[in-house]
Image (tube, rainbow, N blue to C red; front, side, top):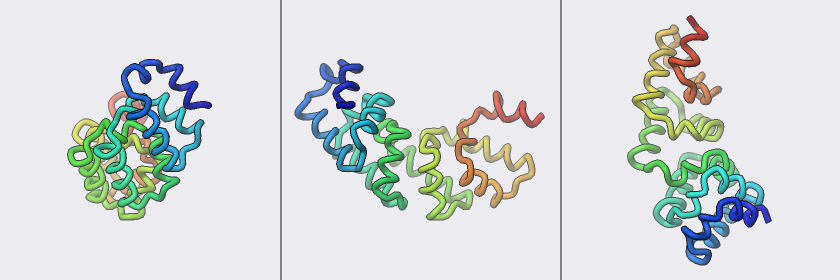
Length: 173
């Protein structure tokens, strides 16, 4: 299977994690979210550490949180596949929830927040102070109103992951 091939590419998974206590339960759990073997393999290849995160302390709470934002099971699965780091690299309380709060403060409503996360889950890993706030400030300096900034983020959240200094400012100047 694809999962077995992936584990063969990352043999440290076998040495670092117990097959019975870590790997099998996480594979079953990922399948329960709707990921097929190929999707699981891609997820593990992107971020093998996901296999070591606690189901109870990391993985399940993040899935519940994503669902509480309005993502359904298939959207959660796609989000995990796109950005598996979301499952454990970032604190719910210190990173993820503040970013959602910040998106809402910009004017994104309860239907726009999950759509934005779905389009570009990497947004949840961007620094508020180093990336997101300076980007919004720059968009406003270009003459965008709050509603236009919100619409831009909702329509093309990938913009928030671009380098302001290296990519965007030189293109505008």
